[in-house]
Length: 340
Image (cartoon, rainbow, N blue to C red; front, top):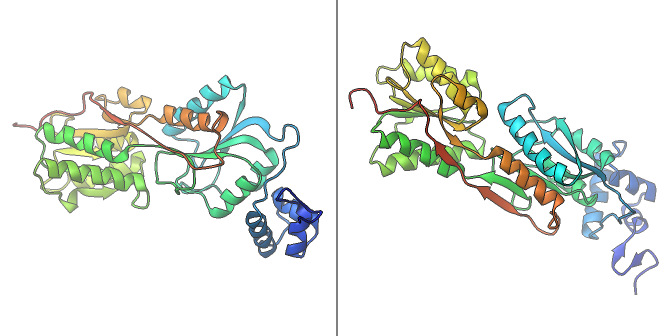
């Protein structure tokens, strides 16, 4: 027979407090994200809350009418596309969008969770590859749904996420170049600790194999998705005596760096060097020449993530994984190699 602190299998804070050897107010502080609790006490209380399957009881309208969008870097060409996607769906639901910048490309900063628990949004869209277990526990205990928009990594299987087909994108970019009869094709992908970088690299290698070409390790570079990194790697590649005739850059920004390196080396694009980017951000069509690139549907990725949060099937009972297609956009930065 359940105790007075347990009704219909639902545990109260008093039960958790008693088992943890603390006061109910301490348990309440943990639930509300207060920082004046020791890590050991917090971990013990969270473990007991999870063990008992505790979920905060709804009191009227506990969530603020807003969706929080969290980046590690707001000053990027990707950010505006993602913001527009979240706003498109938020407007339909008459919900405000709050923007937060914190953390690294892998996870939000440690101070963010306390703030979001105070704000209590209807949901959180996170532009990160992964989430620490502690962050996931906090959000789930407070019944705050969250979705990762994942243009960069491979989220944990217990996290709802929206991503894109990075391997297919790498394959399409490289097959376009082999179809133009390029044989020495370099790649400047992203950081080696990001799954999207490795997936695009695998697509590149697969396309070379399909064309009967052997991948040259000397033509593979790991960049940082930014212009400067693309420029520096391209300068190194283009100064080789056996330089590539084409470069597949893992982002449009890196591709812009490649275009500048080609200019400084006295090479014409696409006559002397073909260049393919990735993402198809708006500035890609305004480069000189206009950039052939892989379209990654960033805006739609953000829209689908926000629909997951605000729609009838809100995350909570199971993780959803959506992968959107990529496709090649051919412009003027690619052509057959000279003399072919």
